[in-house]
Image (tube, rainbow, N blue to C red; front, side):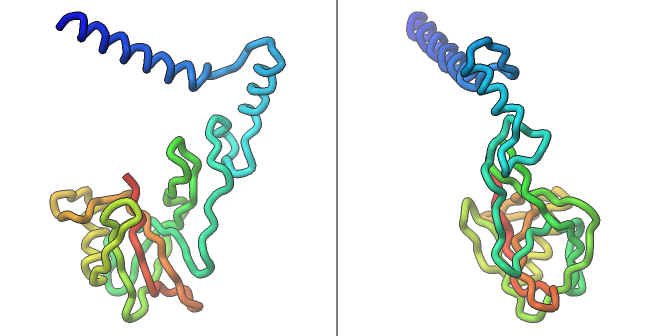
Length: 177
């Protein structure tokens, strides 16, 4: 039993060592041409990587379809109005993640808005608009007990479709683990 435990410990240590080695040191100071090229590549962000974050390469930021906007509500919607920040993509180790930025502004809901909440990766369920409003409020208040399966609080980012007047005609929660 002790030898099995020692073998498992050694395997786990080796796997951790390989992972650390695969990531490489935080600064390449090697004298070889390959090391110099690697260091230069790390110092120059790719076209899609925000400046100041040279160790992450997500490629080009996502492009939204015409009429779509990613929003981060700042309070529970009420009286057909949602106050939200525009959400911008940021490169992270897990690819592009949207975060609310800047001042908030009001977005008005049209009649017969299509509302969907995330139920998992890439899956949504249509709900009534009042249910979406309650969900947004519960998640912003960190009242996770009020959010019942199959729904979860998933980052508070919503893909919103706007009409020509700039009013919301569809809103869908973006799932994020």
